[in-house]
Length: 342
Ligand code: F6P
Image (cartoon, rainbow, N blue to C red; front, side):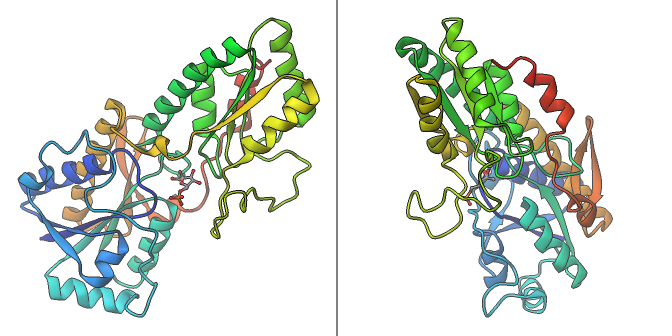
């Protein structure tokens, strides 16, 4: 069987390890052959492929990014998009099945292609860790590690200047990166999209830290909003980008904290470094296991499923189950840490 792999959506440390895991197991155990579609769905729609044999994936698990390239292009987009055209491309290239590695958008597109008759399976991916039906996504551990290191570094400069430091991490809809890095780094306040806090409460935590002679450290997820910020409030426009951009909340919060408390406050937006560089060992192992397991789905013809981590097991989950919900930080998980703020 000849299988095409693509990586779609924002990149994520561990994508290459998935590709390597799939090629190594698929070629060894199942006699599968692999090609890679370049730049996500674009490569599939346009039939732009590269051969993926064992030498092509050698030593790949420690490399960040994706060797195949990625994009936010959708399979139904453009004059050549759509399942009928994709089926033609697959037939012309002699490809029997597709493995799509991506986040929510990718899984939604994959589900639609499956409904339209394409033999497709998936591997979940996002540094935000907010995909339902999988306990952890690869890339999350790496992002948390990077954010924790940033907190450690900001703490020494904050302490030296007796400043309040506000670190903004990724997390559009869910605050997992903020919660985990803030916990690991000993933040004095962690602000996440799921649970609003008032500016008065944030400033009360900041002041109590200052009163103990410490430099306050606030970690905020990019999707966090104060209650007074209207629904749909966006920080976009602050960097002249046309497309929606959620980052920038720390640059709004820092002057508010300074104004309310009189404590000099600085904002740092961590941004894309959270997605770059080498994956942690945990992410390499998880990504490799997912890559290996997805070849089982192909061999068994379990189309319309993705592989997911349940506890320590890798199991198949149907796309529509995985898409039913976002995995938000539960209130009790947040409250567990909140008692330590201030
Ligand atoms: O991977 C998800 C994410 O990291 C979000 O937290 C963030 O909003 C988004 O990617 C930004 O990515 P891009 O600029 O590539 O669309």
